[in-house]
Image (cartoon, rainbow, N blue to C red; front, top):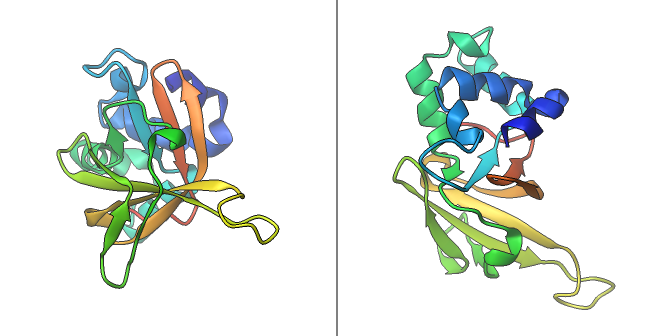
Length: 166
């Protein structure tokens, strides 16, 4: 996974700096305690928004413990592909969940993941399948914008540029 991020600097430079600063590089190189991980990965733009919102100029100005805390909320210590996640839904208005599956994150909290299949040419459940997630600490349902980026030691499920850390 580390090599993938390294080869895509336009999207992941700040993510790599954050991972290094948090002391988690080994995990992303496949040397950590988990053989496989799924990373709900924030892009450079999401990290830059966090910097701006918190009056930081560089990722290394964020305390290392804070970087680690933010990242551990986005790491599932197992390999999860979109096809592994059942259809489901979650209402932001009521919090009601149907279908889907709950996974434990590296920090011990939980993420609810589900898939939704669009209709295609008026035919229900014939279109694209999208992966969604909800983490209590972020208090909103979010769609994965680029899913199933497979690496040797896990899967990157890329978050949209509009993702906001808590």
